Length: 264
Image (cartoon, rainbow, N blue to C red):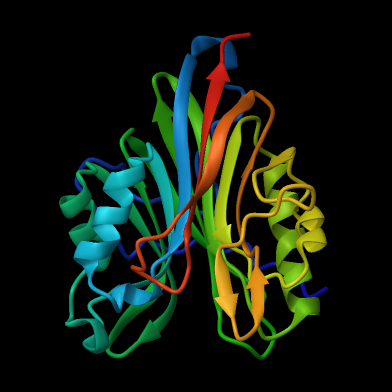
């Protein structure tokens, strides 16, 4: 597998409430945080918004309906011609009521940028963007935030993996798996573009919301129903409920889950 590039890029959008982005390749992590410091419920979600082609108002309505504490977004435009030269991350944060947000650029597009994002109700203390080996396909990246959840430093990652090649996609999953090993409490949110739900095992996560014994269809493509989006968490999270929500704001449905965190 081609070596993972250990470069950290400055995040391309964000808000004044976040720390300055770390571009040294040694971004802060939540490792070593005391899980017993929290005893709470938390709602997580992920949604591929398809650059808001149905309107950001519909995307924000979907987010407000589920009201996740932290949500990962994929296929997000920032200042692209095709979406009206709007910073979709900042706009959705404003419309849906989130004080903290960050953008992870994958590629330049239409005189702007395109990638993934995190919206959070809790402070984002640091953020970095790391490129993934993408072969000859569209470049992909991982956004990594350290979020202060009532005193717990939680590592939250968002990504959107390649659809061009299963071999490259699995290599990307293995890279992310190596990253997760360095975190104590983590959340991984993404569109993994995996046609086989069994491939999620390459991520090496502790717990998967979307899995073989309980697949959630998050996208229909041609005549296939696909469970390609997922929420992956570490120890310390106990699922209370989960599901999908669809108000037709995208070609994907939102995947969400409510967890109890800590308390042990």
